[in-house]
Amino acid sequence: MGIPMAFAQLSQTLMNTTDVALVGRLKGESLAAMAVGQATYGMVLSLGIGVVAAVSPLVSQAHGAHNEKAISRALVIGCYASLLLTVLFWPLLYSVDHLFHWLEYEPEMITLATGYTRAAMLGLPFSFIFFVQKNYLDSVSRPRWPMLVAVVGILVNLLADYALMYGHFGFPEMGVMGTGLATTVVNLFMALSLLPACRQQLRTPLWLRQTKRSWKEFLEVGLPIAGTIGLEVGLFVVGALMMGKLGAEEAAAHQIVLVCAATTFMIPLGISFAGSTRVGQAVGRRDFAAVRPAGLACILVGCLFMLMTAVLFITLPGPVVELFWDPSVERSETVKTFAMELLLIAGFFQIMDGLQVTAVGSLRGLKDVRIPLYICIFSYWVVGLSSAVYLTFYTPLRHQGLWIGLLLGLSTAGLTLGARFWKLSTRVRTDQELQRAVTVESVED
Image (tube, rainbow, N blue to C red; front, side):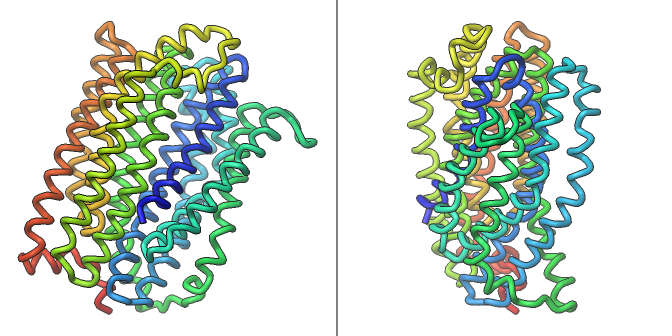
């Protein structure tokens, strides 16, 4: 189950990797501008994805309990939530130029970053709906179709980038803005491609008496998940904005290393979805003894994979960076040097990154979303951000200090969340009150 989920997540990031590799061959501040624009867009996108992630525990527990009505309600509400989130987020993204002016970025960077953000935001509703459908299919143990669609999406994204960035196939040359439009195109493609696999469940009507309670349950699960994801992503968004303050070279180096770390992160993220599904299905069928083996298998596989990537980052930083930076681009040696320094630090937090995402995925299957939110607030924004700000602006470490701060935040989150899953998976075997607490209400309709 975990392999197709992991490949689907990896395919998503490979699209971003393609964007970075192509934009890195444009002149001027294109890559730095995309890093800033993508960070802002990514923050909003991640919050929405977190809300609709409620589909996963709701559907997986309902699937374990063989409750088809509860499965359909979660899927339909997820689609409605996608549209409401779009209405909420679009005005914020359209006005992003005010944020860039307030941060006192260079005029060229403001123009390019704003163009990218406004073009990418058009695909926001399609991205949310794709993840709603993907979460549903993953949770009913049908992950292969989302994986196939995501893999084909890499090719669609590459062709769209090539056409819109460089002006091929009759399209005008739009540079960084073309990358944002390509993101919209591929999100539309993926959302439409999953509709045939979900259309039967989407036909189920929602009655008013069911809808009110179901929305309450959906938001009680989805909002803490969104908060947890938003806190982590927000830390990296603030990091990208801080790098933008240091300079274009630091921002470009940060974007290169961030793509490397995000690409490897997709494997344990996909594994975490499998862990959440297996834990949730075990809870739904009230097989509480199966909770710990399912969660620990998820955590172990995720951490072992990240150990291998850590070795790669630490031993071969130069070749990895050269995948994303053309030597012919001006100031390339400075950017490459900065990126290699950051990649060494990124190698050390790979294992902790894998631990925190797989632990939080396993906890999500137990419907444990509120306490992990508090853990992430402390880990990312008290430990991580405060360390990053101090080391970046008040020590000679500068760009290296920012990534050391990220490392401290992720380490705190990983160890704490791992300990919480160990504790809950022990108690849930015999504690009947906890068993009732971790079970979704609609499973027992």
